[in-house]
Image (tube, rainbow, N blue to C red):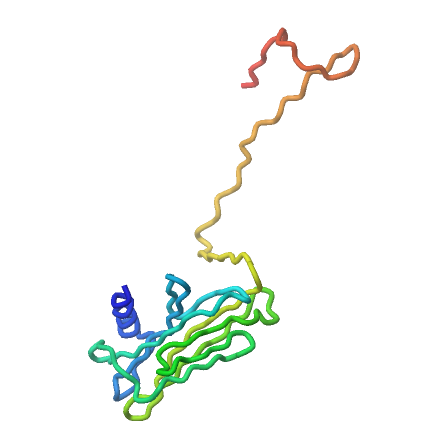
Length: 188
């Protein structure tokens, strides 16, 4: 499964030009991949404040051949805001542990960019990034779908029938349940 994911990331970085190759070297960084348990997220992930740490990885490919490649130095990981999510790189720099700490001041959470910077053989910077959104506790997140004006929403139709009122006894003025002896009237 890991080999298939790696080939998918190579294809994604090369074909979609998600991370353009550095001029002259052909070294490309794939987007940061986040893993929680058996779930893998490419480029972005949303977690709750106080959730356990997340595993993150980066890989490099030769943009000309699509084959795995190595940076000339150890990749350096950083968080744009360590108070939202901190990052601790492994010794080889190819993976890191990202810890969600705070959702910040925003009601729906705060996004922070995790950056990985390395250099190719010529000393040019090769960068990969991923976004971690930390939301406060268990929050329901919705999705807004936009459409063009030509796709009008269907009108809302109320198809409920009115509830018949119980008959009124004219002598006492009270409502009594029907006895079954009354004639049945079909309103249609």
